[in-house]
Length: 177
Image 1 (tube, rainbow, N blue to C red):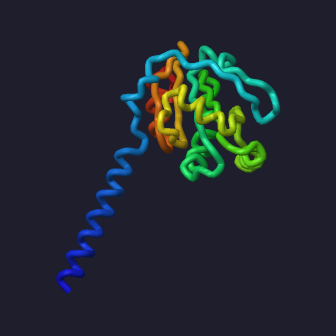
Image 2 (cartoon, rainbow, N blue to C red):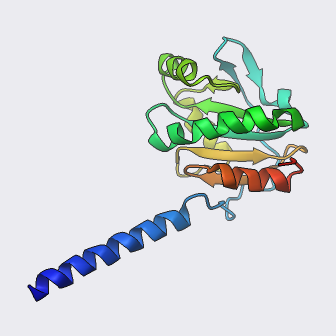
C-alpha cells in the first residue's frame, strides 16, 4: 500500500511538473533566435485566389507571418484568435499572413470552413525552407514571426501563439488595444 501511494504521488508530481514546464515554454519568444533584428527575407508565393503575392506588398505595416498546416493541432487552435486579431486591428496597419506548409486542397477547404480573413500563401513543403530563412531552424509548427514597420524581424514564437502574447507584441509596436 505504501509503495502504491508513493508511486501515485510521484506520478502526480511528474505530471504537474510537465504541465508547468509546458506552460513555461509555450508562448515564449525565442530571444536567442539570430533572425531577430535582421531585415526580413524577401519571398513570393501564390495565395488561395491564385495570385502571386510578394512580402513587399505589406511593407510599412506590422506583419505577423504565421507558418501553419491543417494537420497541426496547435496551428488549428490558434487560427480563430488570428482571425479575430486581423478583424480587430487590421485598420491600424496590422497584417497577418499565413504561410501554409500543406496540401493546397486541404488548405482551401480549411480556409473556407473557418472563414480565413487574411491572406494564406501556399508554400507546400518549400515552406519549411522559407521558415528557416525566418529563423525556424528546427522546423517547428506553428511558427510565428513579427516584422516591424521598418521590415525587421522583431519577434519569433515557436509553438502556439496566444492572443494575449500577440497583443503584448502588437502593443509594443504601437497597435492600440
